[in-house]
Length: 135
Image 1 (spheres, rainbow, N blue to C red):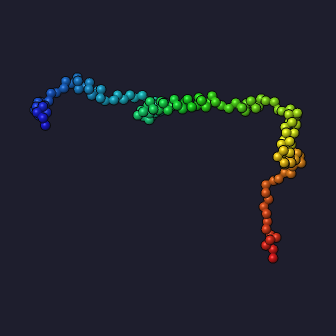
Image 2 (cartoon, one colour):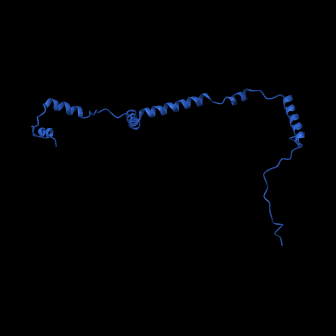
Image 3 (cartoon, rainbow, N blue to C red):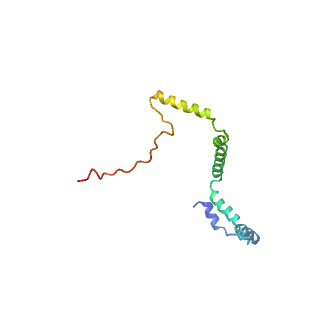
């Protein structure tokens, strides 16, 4: 120990004034109120405990999510609304498209049967092998 510390130990301890002691103890003790615990107050206290270590980081994260949400809502696809409002194609347009389909089939060398003449195929049926194992 150095000399200063030894001199301090030899000095007698002074007694604090009583009004100072009461003031210091009152400042150190938390004041408890008898107010009823409100759910909102309790939620706020829990959120403060959660966010207190890094409030700026949490605020930045919340702001980023808000921006993402706004961009997502502003970029909604309005194509279905336009498709619902558009008129159906005229019979002439449908006939021209069918004619183009037939011409394309001729060019690539296949034949396209009209919808009414096409054979509708269902799901594959199970095959039985009873004939092959008959003795």
